[in-house]
Length: 377
Image (cartoon, rainbow, N blue to C red; front, top):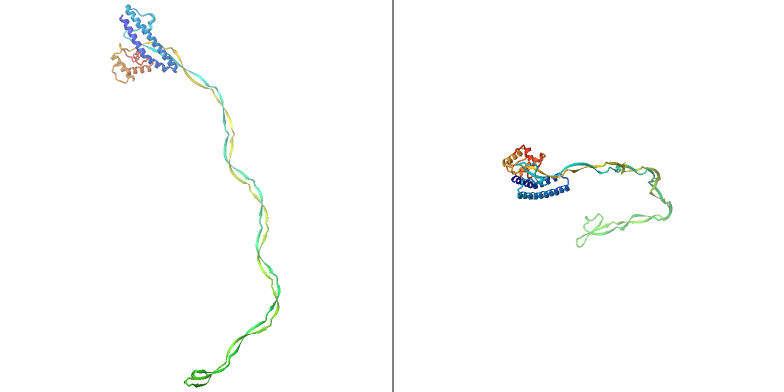
C-alpha cells in the first residue's frame, strides 16, 4: 500500500513538472516550425494533451480512492499504464514532458518567372560640331567709277569794246599877277626923324613940342588870280575797251566709267548636330528565374515522454554543488557555488544541454546532463 502511494505521488510530481515544461516545449516547437499556423497547431495540441493529462489525473485519483477503499495492492489496469513511467527504479524521479513534433527542412527550386526576351532600344547618338557653311555665294557686281572733276580759271568777255563821243569842255588856267593896292603917298608921323625910316621928307615941331615927320609911304601891291582860256570847248570820239572777267570753272577731267568687281562668297561658323550612330535595338534573352524555397516536413508527431530528472530525492546540497562546479568548469555557470538549485543553475544546465544536443528543460535538470558531466549523484 505504501509503495503504491509513493508511485502515485511521483506520478503527480512528474505531471506537475510536465505542466510547467509544456510552455518550454511549446517555445522549442515554435523555434523549429516555420510558420505561425504550425505554432498555433502545436499550441492547440499542447492544450489537448494537457486536458487529456488532467483527465487521467482525475482517473488516477479515482483509482487511488478505489484502492484505498478495497485495500488492494495490485497495479492498475492496462488502460492506465501510460500514466506511469516505464520500469521505474526506487530513488529516481521522472517528469512527463511533451516532445514536440520533429520536422526537417526541405529545399525546393521553384520557377518564379518564365524565360522571356527584352527588347532594349539604344537611341541614336548625336554629336554637336562646328561647321563652316556658305551664307552667300560668290558673285560679281558692276561698280561705277565716278567722273573726276577739276577747277580751271577762264577769262570771259563781260562787255565788248565800243566808242562814244564826249564833249571836251573849254580849258581854263588860273594865273597869278600883282596889282597896285595903294599908290605911293606921304604921311605925317610923330617922333623924331631918327626913329622914322629913311623916307623922311621933312619934319616940324608942333605947339606942344611934339615932332612930326613927313614921310613917304611907298605904293602897296596885292596878288590876284584870274582865269584865262587855254583851249576852247570841243567834242572828240573816245574808244571804250572791252571788259573781261576771270571766273573759276568746274570741268570734267575724267568721265564716269564702270568696272566689274568680284564679290567673294560669305561663310559663317554654325553649330550643328550630327548623327554619329543610328538608333538600334538589342534583343536580350531573359533566362527563367528560379527561387529556392524551404519548407518544413514533419518527421514525427509530438508525443508525451517520461524523462528522468533531478528531484528532491537526489537534489541534495552536495549534489547541487557538484552540478554547479561541473557547469562552472565548462564555462556555463557564473554565479557562486551555493548548493541551491535556482534560476541561474537551471539556465546553465539548459544551455549546456542544448549545446550538447541533450534533452533540455527550463525548470528541471534532465539526468542526461548529469551523466554528460560525469557526475554520480
